[in-house]
Image 1 (tube, rainbow, N blue to C red):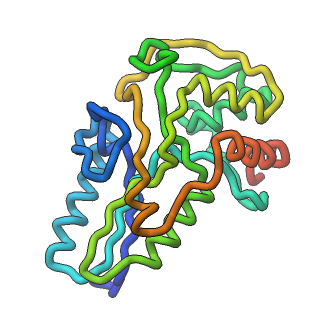
Image 2 (cartoon, rainbow, N blue to C red):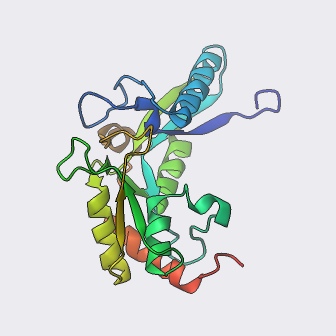
Length: 227
């Protein structure tokens, strides 16, 4: 990128770089100790960028996404993974597939975590809010400076709560199968978004329920994805 004159870098990182912190919410100074390959790879990329920035005038912003869901509210874009990736896709896609009868039900992996209802807790951020965070990051990027920001709502929702919200959005009583934990999943993760609110004037606008309702509208119109 430097060789081709790129002056600004917005890097898509992840909350998975934090691993399973001892306390919540997660701030940008929470120690990074990833516990799965995805988080480890993202942290390696962050380290490379930070090392490079020490001798570069490139403007850098590192955005650590929390769990992204949703669709374009104007109905132009939505989530449509290819069949071979559905099994390992996002929980929102699985919920919608179950609601549409594409799969017989939803599989919840792990009900014995140290959380209020035993299922994983995540911070679900709408994709439109995430796009807005990128725009704000571009506006505030400065040469020779590195900005690191959590991009989340600051509110954790359990998998069971997510499923109940999905049932409400779709109007379908989705069948649930409870399975053993999936290796590499952490119990609880949600953000403290105060830094990005303070420095970039960004705040999440969409609630979990609103985000799922918008995404469900797209799913109903695009039963076969983009085909």
